[in-house]
Image 1 (cartoon, rainbow, N blue to C red):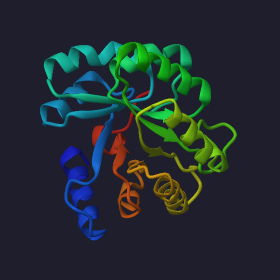
Image 2: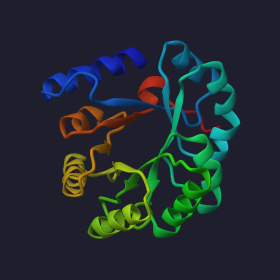
Image 3: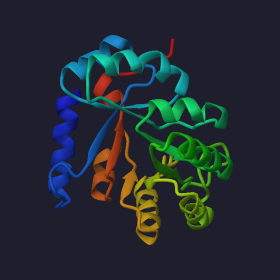
Image 4: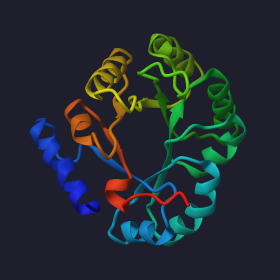
Length: 217
C-alpha cells in the first residue's frame, strides 16, 4: 500500500459509484507517524493531513507547512475546550465539534479572530458511551444551535463501532446531513473507505494504509 494506491482506489470507488472524479478528498492521517514517513507523503505531492491531538500537531506542522506551501491540516480527534484557541490557529478544519460548550468557545474565538476553521459535527452513530460525538437523536437540535452561533458548519463526521458493519452508520450520517442541508460527509477509514465513497463520503481519513502501521512506542 501507499499514497498512489489509495488515490487509485478512491478514484475507482468514485467511478463505481457514478460520482465525479475528485469528488472525494483524501485526508492522510499522520498522527503518531515518524517525520520521515510524513515528509515522504508531502514530497509525493499530497497536501492534506489529519491529526488527532492539538499538541502533537503544534510540534510538527508549523515547520512542515513553511517547507511545503499549500499544506492543510485537519483536526480529526476530540477537541478539549481549553485547546480550542490553539486549534483554530493551526487547523483549516475541525471534524469533532460535539458539544455546546465547545461550540460557544469556537464562536467567541471566531468573533475575536474574524475567521473560523470549517467545522464538521461529530455524530456518535453507534451511541457508544465511551466515544465522543453528538447522539443521533440530538444532532438536528445541535446543528441548529451551532448555526445560530454563526459557526461555519460544512458537514458531519462519524467513526462507526469497530464490530459493526459500517454501511448503516454511513447511511445514517448521510441522511442526517441531507436533512440539515450539509454537503460534507467525513467518513471512512483505511478498512472501509471504499464503502464510504459508495455511501457519499466527501472526506475519507486514511492513515495506516498510506504510512504503514503506527508505532505507539
